[in-house]
Image (cartoon, rainbow, N blue to C red):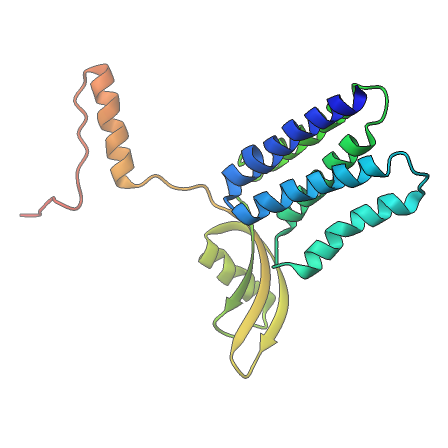
Length: 215
């Protein structure tokens, strides 16, 4: 009975993780399949070995699956690796189904909630990271930071210089920055003023710099 509850919990959890959270946000069908296949495989293996005396090596070997996938597959981001770990952890929870029976559903729920919150667009949505090639060799750090702030329209910049090529006149950097808040355009401002005037019944007038003439 406990295994049936754990299995049902895992099926629901991997659907929420792989499709609802990952695929609908990041749109990579190949990784959607990978997460589901990894989870199902881990559940099957741990369930089959549940009645066999095993040591710590089993857990270490299962977690080593992720490293093999990482080395043998296309490059993926650290964010996507986090989803791999989560799919693996959910599979282990379901396959081992520790007692009491409510422990697996509770831990699975906590894991899914953590991923849902931390990968939400509401968390650090203005913070970004890029590997960027500057079209000239810049050896002065302050000048480089000022240049990157202008390029990315950033408030704060943290930069690590990966390579300076004096022959090709380029600089390769790993840049992390916080983007400035988006400014409202003149068109957006006029539209908001017109909407306010309709609600209040007042007439809003704003000059249009693109059509006005000086006589």
